[in-house]
Image 1 (tube, rainbow, N blue to C red):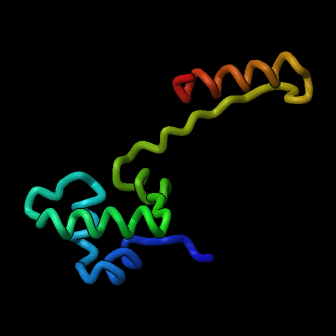
Image 2 (image 1 turned 90 degrees about the horizontal axis):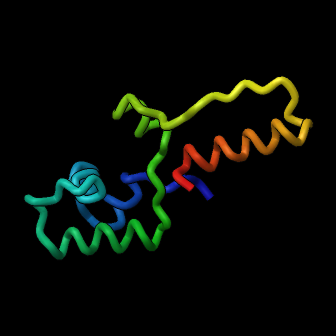
Length: 91
């Protein structure tokens, strides 16, 4: 199945892509409550997930870190990478 886009949500909800974008980004103060509910319901039903690459282009933040290790097969470095990942994720 193809990735769900805001266009898919807009078509199903009978609203514009702009309306869907405003609702999903929390800027729906001009949108009717019923429309907001319908858009959120459809987004949940379709299991919509934002494209993180597109979000990164807009926000100029990717939330990606790089880690250079000499030997990932060495258990010390594997644990080090796991710890760095956990710390970065806020675990």
